[in-house]
Image 1 (cartoon, rainbow, N blue to C red):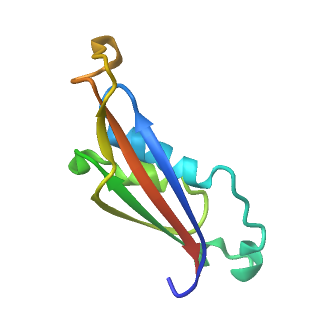
Image 2: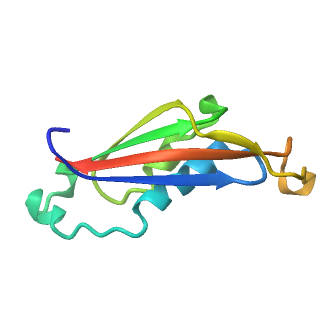
Length: 118
């Protein structure tokens, strides 16, 4: 990405089920859901494929189970790259609910940094 126009941060949690992809999707949505970039279309001359989106995810566990394509699908436009690194947090939810798919009482907390530019 030559020019970063927008950076936003988000956090996502999967309280039950220990699904790192669900937490990552929530983190990315949290980062972008209250933003609008109407000027971006003009900057790319209407060709949204020219827009670059780089997502950095800090995941606490199970990075090998993260479905990057599901995260990428959150973005309706642009060429999306996803970088995964260590971080986030595992924290106890205080309860283990087998009927919710829990394998433990741990919550998965993922942090996201989303960069948009050209």
